[in-house]
Length: 89
Image (cartoon, rainbow, N blue to C red):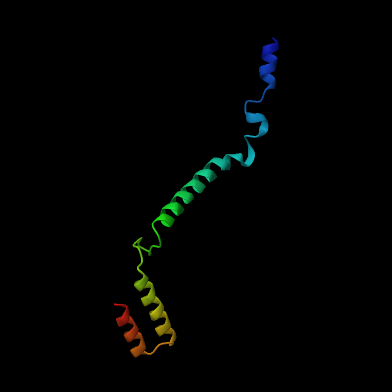
């Protein structure tokens, strides 16, 4: 008889003395997302700087982009721009 009363008094959903409810269920998925982000970041960091398509960018490509930006702003004339692009090749 004592066993029956003891079973009736316990709450089946009281896991870990109340520490298993509330916002604790977010911990598992949050850790999985954090782990996935960490793996992606490590892979990207180990391969060096990459372009939008994942292709490694060359230093001359970046130099051409800077020249194009300066030309678009009007800092370089057409002749200066062409001369400097030709020097990069």
